[in-house]
Amino acid sequence: MKFDLVLDKSFEIAETPVWDERIGKLYYTDLFTGDVHRYDPKSKEQEVWKTNALIGSAVPTNDVDKLFCALDTGMHLLDLKNGELELLCDPESGNKQNRYNDTRIDPKGRIFTSSVSKLYGTDDYRPDMRGNFYMVDTDMSVHVVEEGINQYNAIVWNADATKMYVIDTFNEALISYDYDIDNGPVGKGRVIIEFGELGMPDGMSIDSEDNLYICHWTKQVSVWDKDMNLKETIKIPVEFACCTGFGGEDMKDLYLATAKYCYSEEELKANQGAGGLFCAKSAVRGTGDHFYQVNK
Image (cartoon, rainbow, N blue to C red):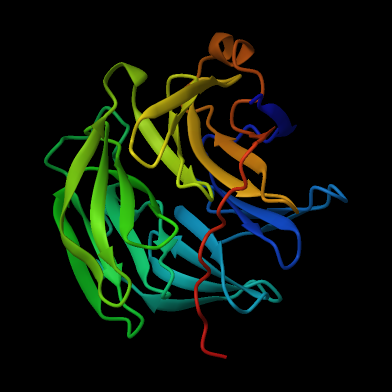
């Protein structure tokens, strides 16, 4: 599998490539500006909506004209026609020290999100600056799944929704939860992979055979089978791999969002395309994200 640059954006941190098969377009985000981007790989058309906030994720909804967005001010609906934002909920009730990170929707329409200090990744961050991992049920009730976390990323479910996988970036591990589709996570999560020499993990996606594709800030994507055996490591053209997501008509286009975070000018020369989107062709059909359900 070979990743080629398709969008040279030079973002500090590009994130969450999510495919909408209804319109054949890819959404992705610019974490620090809060901009939501949409890309049509056929026409090459690019569109952008501004949220003016730190953004964790942008996920389509069952209304093609509305997008679910996890912003540092809470969970919102973005109206793609007029650009207006509608607040759904704010699990941390206005905590200005934290922001919401990678956020996803389960097959029943529940929101899973985690909070992280806005100072994470800076010299001013301390490990006691913590957040929580939340489940927001379909009735908007907020449940704390894990307390006192540093940074969680990337939430996916296996094909029959009996497992939920979450990346613990701070501790460089993969966490697994037993999952009940009617009620959510069963018990506490358990560490099933410690990445060690593979390096810091970030985003993740899953294919139709339950293989996991995990991004690392060490110039690679690791691929794990459903029994958590390492299948391969895919070298990528830039150092910081942020998040993968499947798309395309056959769901075999694997998009990769990257970062140019804290690069010097010399480092940028060695990482051409950093902060942009790359794409590779997968032999296995991917799994798309679950959409948020809007009450029309």
